[in-house]
Amino acid sequence: MAGRRRRQRPDPPPTGFLDWTDSRHWAQQARPCRYCGGLTNLRDGSRKAAHKTCAEAAIAEQIAEQAAAYENERLN
Ligand SMILES: [Zn+2]
Image (cartoon, rainbow, N blue to C red; front, side, top):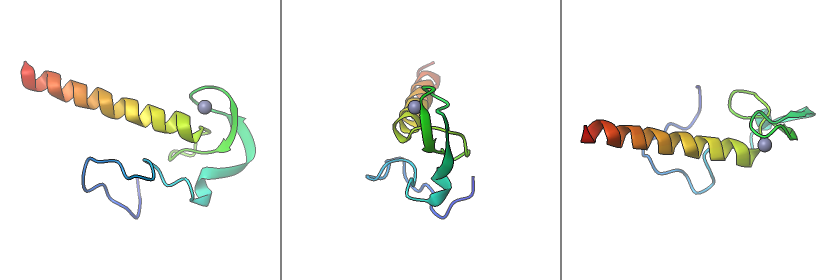
């Protein structure tokens, strides 16, 4: 993923995980959200239709899963 900002620390920025002010996240045509199926004009980082809240919830879940997997690795 190419971006101006690099992740330097694990804390999410106060504005959220993704920069949704970028015009790349907005499309003229509404399409079904990849997570909930509802129509949205928003696109996520992969240019797939997704609500901001759905995409951020999915990202938060992934991070939680990775953290849990890391904990399990350490404990075993
Ligand atoms: Zn959605």
